[in-house]
Image 1 (cartoon, one colour):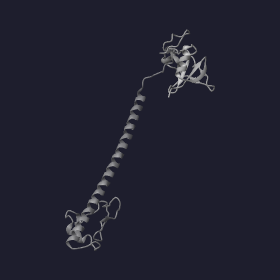
Image 2: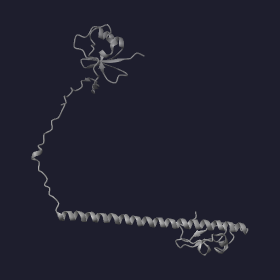
Image 3: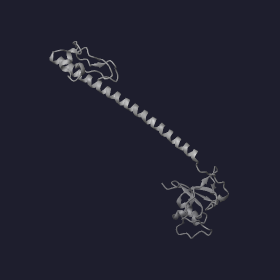
Image 4: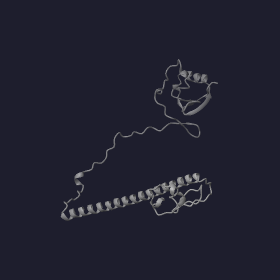
Length: 230
């Protein structure tokens, strides 16, 4: 399907017409290269002279034409669809002259040397700052030591519970016990626990009491969480 074109003459929009009719208008001098042209697919109106096929074999326009190689300026169409020329460019100064500031007339800050009292004050403030910093670091170190000691106690308690659980399973296997059978802890399990434990049984480092009553149960610590086997 051939494209249909709209064109402007003296600011008035006309069309749509076919390409052959545009050629006829150009040949008769009605349509000049400086008149504007638009068809579907164009981003904006553009000089008709850019569509070379319309003016093939025709002499240049008598009036001053447009530079077809110049960059296109997007055109605007008002509510009445009349062509609206873009505003003239505004010259922008190449440089801006800033007011010069005379530094000689600016007030100067007064300075003075530190006397002995000022020096003593600076030293005292430095000492106080160091003491505060040392106290903070010492407090942090103490808290860190406490947390690590607490975690070591928890780890030892959990390890004891694992030893008791392994001893209970071995005792039940050798004596033919089943899940639910009573265990006399710690007396039944002493032969199966390490002889390195004080009193022959493991003790919670935080003072908790280990409890195990039946085969199949997991030994527990009276302290509870985090002194848990699972």
